[in-house]
Length: 124
Image: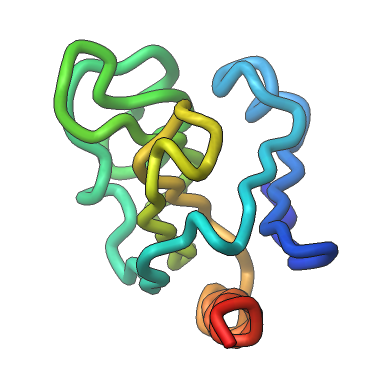
């Protein structure tokens, strides 16, 4: 399972072994200034949309990149039994790769609160 933390003006996500292989990223970081909205997805398997590169096991797990041929490009690592941190990004400000990041974490509510607080601190 991925680990999420906030430091030095960035949100950083460290992926586990299989997640690294399926997402193509060992670590993904984006500037706090690029975060437009922070959500907690209670049903994270419903969030990914569009064509994908990665793993999708109905009702259990989705790991990879969604939205390959248009729409919102999403970096995804979610399981059906764990809520997810859902970040909506300004794609250009985040490096041009993703519009959204959706990642299951053990305490998605606490992670979302930490990211929201850090985003507010950067905005002031």
